Image (cartoon, rainbow, N blue to C red; front, side, top):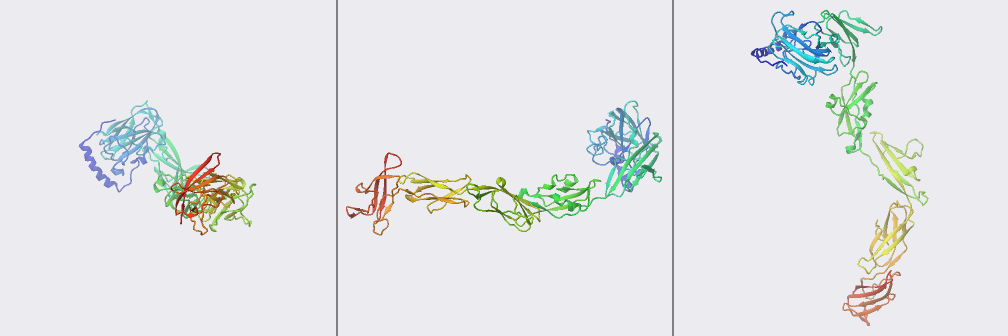
Length: 617
């Protein structure tokens, strides 16, 4: 790498750049003054001489921003070239700049920078390629002759060279390889100047440029598709060709300097830009985050009558510019009001201008539906009643059942299915489609066969003389484990719990019914022993006597009544009419009285129970 220099002369010439730039605004840019218009060169065994870039030639006064120019603090009137290594090895060149083509006249300060190596298909003119890491050699010294060195050049690799005219004086640049026998440059690139085949979208013409500094003659031809022969365009002899028709074009570059004649061909095809039509809004189906849009439903409307075309959808303008299309347009989920769509020709790859696809949300529809449908059947599984499934949402809906539901044979299934037999597999499916929006819902129900109850048994625990009293539990006998029952004691309220707590004494019965209406059953009556908490011996025929409420399962031997002081008042026979509230024919006062019961319960050991009741006057 050469040493960077600084001088007052450099500052002086920077001021001149402004003047030349103003003058240069009236002329077109020179070939090769941007990397995008780069020119090839090769060294061979001869000295190359070509015009420099200067204010009078219409060159650009400064190199474009973006690349890393290394040691070049300024880059006045740049000229861009590239070479390709023919054989591997060191490449050393002498670069000089003078006023006259033969090297005489004023010596002109020349500077340069070299980047590489690059592959042929690399984007070597991009800012990402022209970096400090890829810089090979650079000089900013105040000399008219410089040495450019590319160590260990690799065969087939591309190297980019930018040469600047610091003095901004019209003149000539000479370049010659000075280390013959080491690496070499490939002169075959001189004739390969037209670049790759191009498909041009929405353009009317293109200028083909085969400019080569050492060219002596240019011959342009176009392929005759009828006979397969390239026919010379006699009037076209310049380094450029204006093309406005599709075809295969050829240029032959003759260089007397190199004694070479190289040809290059290129296929140019002009295509109209496809047209994308504005589609109707796409309707989204579902709710919330599960809202789904079938963007493909708009494809035909967007393409119109075009064939051999495709449609791509983009979420944003940035995605369109970066080529990031929506991956699964048939099932797009996104909380946006619109997306963009373009039409691409499969033949040319040309893409249309974008159109907006408006996204709208369809009104949700639901029906009264259960995932499980219980059905009453006999023990053999035959339906005892029919079951109705589904709901009529309106004429714009289409109903498709897993079972035939077309009673009139018109090919249209009814919205409601009347089921009277067990379906195959026990599953019923219904798909409902909104014919206006295309939205669809799928409903599935498992059919469960429920048999009516056969019997209900009662299990009794506890007794009236304990704190918690009697607990009575019902147990249904049926033929199906899927049945769900509810219960009630006597004429009381229904409950799902089969256990009744603190049941009072007396005669009772428990009824069990299947919650879906598949029958009910009532137990045999049962009697529980108990006792009244008060009685009113006033002769009105209600609660005039007090006695225990006996039960056949409990054997009561004696009932003894005494007052609060422990005085024996009455000994009752449980089978008698009871105590009338007197003692030796005299009415006793209203008060609390105690009783003692001797009984034999479910066990064999005699038991006793003591409690109290109230006499009211």
